[in-house]
Length: 158
Image (cartoon, rainbow, N blue to C red; front, side, top):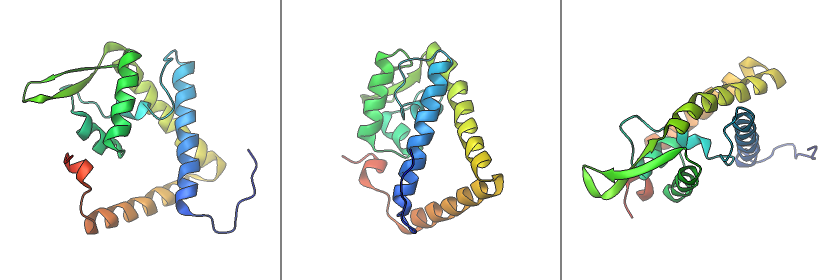
């Protein structure tokens, strides 16, 4: 898609374009590898699920998305056979998310596809530019996290 970009587009707009490219790239790679039924953006849930399981809220915090967004992703991935939820033995009010064997098989493919997406960006620009972008964004995120209170949804508050 060729579009006319302003000289100084909003950073959030640029990040959305990169995120869309990344999620579509990963989704296509997973589909090509035989892992159908994973919607663009839902693969992020696969890479953050530990063997001992994880509550949806904590999974959302690890992936950097809202709890409702992660809940929808988990529900879709559960219907597609990639994850399952079980009662939390430490908290009867919550459930833990676990990878199924199909989810365990898809996880390395999702990680590898994410690596290839970033390598593609490095080919389009340069490895140094991609690393400078990562470094700058990481500094900004750390500064924001150091000076901002944690949102209620990430603390697990209703």
